[in-house]
Image 1 (cartoon, helix red, strand yellow):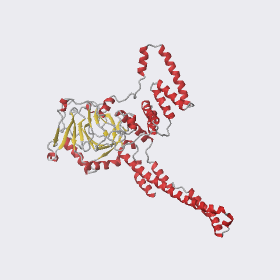
Image 2: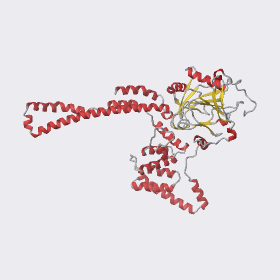
Image 3: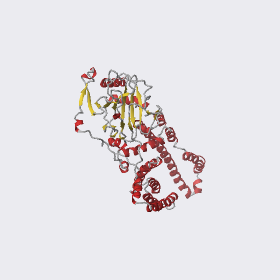
Image 4: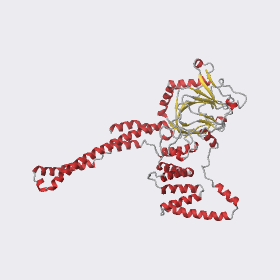
Length: 534
């Protein structure tokens, strides 16, 4: 058991340095190995307990045979001097040894391991974050609770099911966030699975308690009353349900009186106002963004599609690409989005990932008001920054970007490597600083972000597209490829059509790396034009 402790001591301090497991699938894989070690330690404990019980069982069987014989003729038995001696010895010494054996705690090794590991376990934030991720995936990809509960997701290799307890927990997380829409959905799913006969530690009373209140909060008083009555059939003494029943009946009676004194039109209008659904969103393009994530976006007209081509690109006669030109494909016309195929090798990807993994930290955004870096709920990933001088592979990648784009990378930001978490995403945003953010990149002294280069370093089983809601473009991850677009017009004005997002990862592990190129050093590589929008 000592070796378990040693291994865990090596593995787990890395996890301690990176809180927020749910924001990186790459780092969550470490938890799988941690749990495997725990199981090994648990099995060692079980084996030790079984060995202990086997010793006690053998002792009991031996004494059972001995006492059975002795009790038939006690005087004759102890009349034998050897038996008399052994009786004294057993009661004075051996029973004490047995007592010590029974009292011996075989769990010390396992408990020590568990204690060491617990400080590195995911915390409440991780559990809630993973739960919210499931709710986010449910909305983005139009998944019903039964589909998620049964694990019927596209591209899954390891099918998994949600128990009643799991569904109940998801409902409680939504309830805590005052998200009564999702509370209702998941409590109803828990109730369905209980009705189907699933054995659970959660009872229908607990589920109906949450469900009835969530329904009431959404304005469906009739259903809330019905569910409360159903609860009271199961538990007539339920204090809160009895109170709610009286309150609901009072409200309904009051509404009935009000309806009598109002016109039918007003009554219909009141009913319309009570329509249930998801809460009002802060993101204006939410619907368009989620449609693009599902692949339901705007389809380009045939006339525009004919202008998109695949070609071999030699980087304007760059010696490195004359004999082996890069494969280039037009993904979109306005803004022009170009994909480069087979532009980074698997070996290079693994080196970049290995360099980044120890440094992965929760991804941040720059606060447009304060300029400070901060974590936000709409960017779920971890990132790390790699400099060209650290490793020749990073330097070679940087030069490849310069050769193919014709832009100077000496003023660019370091290579950013990102790994997305459970339902990992980055909601619609701009890469460049707008006019109301004049100090966004002031510290860098290299001007605004003129262009973005994005490597896809993994395939994604489902979800994870890069979408441009303003124009309806969807670019899907493909390992070994990269996409490139200009954030600024040649005039230096921002191209607002480049507003883009990383869709939630539904199934799989998404790794990307990107390079933000800046204005300084591009004066002669991409000269300014007289028109603002060119």
